[in-house]
Amino acid sequence: MTGRLSALWTLLRGDGQADRAVPPSGFTARLTVFTAAAMAFLAVFALAFSVSSGRLADRWAQELARTSTLRISAPAVEVEAQTAAALQVLEQTPGIAEARALTEAEEQALLEPWFGPDLPLDALPMPQLIEIVETEAGYDATGLRARLQAEVPGAVLDDHTRWRDPLVDAANRLRTLGWAALLLILGALAAMVTLAAQSALSANAQVIRVLRLVGARDSYIARAFVRRFTLRAAAGAVAGTAAGMACILLIPEGPADGFLTGLGFTGPGWLVPLLIPVLCAVIAFLATRLAANATLRSHL
Amino acid sequence: MIELEDVSYAYGGDTLFADLSLSVQPGSFLFLTGPSGAGKTTLLKLIYGDLLATSGRVALFGQDAAEMSRDQMALTRRRIGVVHQDCQFLDHLPVAENVALPLQVSGRADEAAQNLDDLIGWVGLTRQANQTPPQLSGGERQRAALARAVITSPDVIVADEPTGNVDWEMSQRLLTLLVELNRMGKTVLIATHDLNLIRAAKSQVNAQLLRLTRGRLESGVTL
Image 1 (spheres, rainbow over the protein chains, first blue to last red):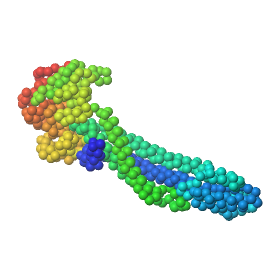
Image 2 (image 1 turned 180 degrees about the vertical axis):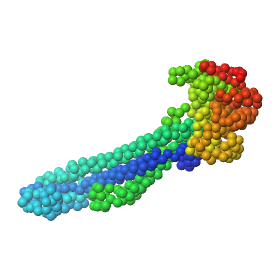
Image 3 (image 1 turned 135 degrees about the horizontal axis):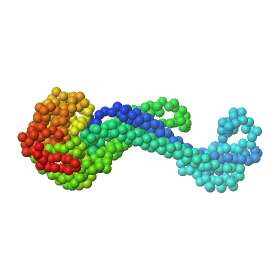
Image 4 (image 1 turned 90 degrees about the vertical axis):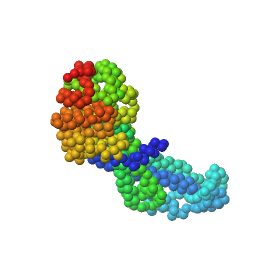
């Protein structure tokens, strides 16, 4: 552990002479900076996607878990009586904070997306819907169903489990997808940095040979390459992260429950993408170190 | 100090030399001669750990070269100053920094300021100190390589044709430097075709002559 900290400190502090021993290589330098910037930019979006999906899953889970619907399908002459009986049962049920019969206008609004605004509800055998809001503790759905079956024969309780679970599951899968995308992006960054480092190491075969000839240890030679690529990747990632965060800030605000308009970070969540440049630098450090050690081992 | 026991080296299926033995004693001054292609450069590379023998044992300062770790080999190379035949440098750095490189890599950069100017002056490169190696002539590169090889005052100095591209006056000057180092107790091993250089050296020090020919190493050779 102490050795690793020492290596990190040496890396951060730098060794002017070791750095100078390797000539500045324009192409690989630009490639590394650009790749790190592009990957960090994409990583910000993947992170935002993942965080937003997670937030959506949590919200859906919470909101839907706390609401239920009671549907009363009865002959027209009995609907009013059964509704009143159902409301009475619900009022007496522990764990129910609020129960309210939807008005005709509200039911029409629910159907409007499918049937249009001029739907004659009177002409359709529409069930009466009762919206139920639970308390934190929730209610006993099995007990309530049994009581409703006895007292309100036309009532069907829908506690949203059937469609809440797939929705939450979908949102959770989106969150996983976001994390997977993030991992792939960082993996691609590692691959690109490794290729750039290998290219630089190959291009500097004579430098390595001269340094070994005069007694340089592998760690001395590797340090020059590792520090250079780590700093380049960090610089590119800072730029890419800043650009990504700026773009997310520019996404127009919309309804709070909109998915795309809700893409982004909230509150302290804005600090999370700031870890991306650090992560990119660590990845570049490890990738270059592995590439350098492998290349140096191929020299006697 | 440096021992080769029954050393063979094969390259691409061809055996360059076989069962070759050599003992380099501390403070000795050795010349290695032989026809081109006899394997002089290869032998020197075995001695400074740039190649490993196909068979046999090469011991550098008491350690088997084949069993050294990479760090041990690096530390061993610091005790051997090498003048390469093709004089490789870091082409983007000035001559002065190239000469000081062995001190830099061994963490003795502070010593550079004291010795560097004197040494660069001794090899006649004061004017070229801030130029880069590609700007130097062949002879200047050889002088810079020699300065780099001796700046750390190594125990052994190995030089492959160190005077191949320099005029007689400069070769005498470089020889004087090597003789001075030898008188200070350093071991010098030079591969050369230059018989005049060998004669000049023999008049100043007790130089031994080795000849590598047809895969065999002959010692105690006379001119």
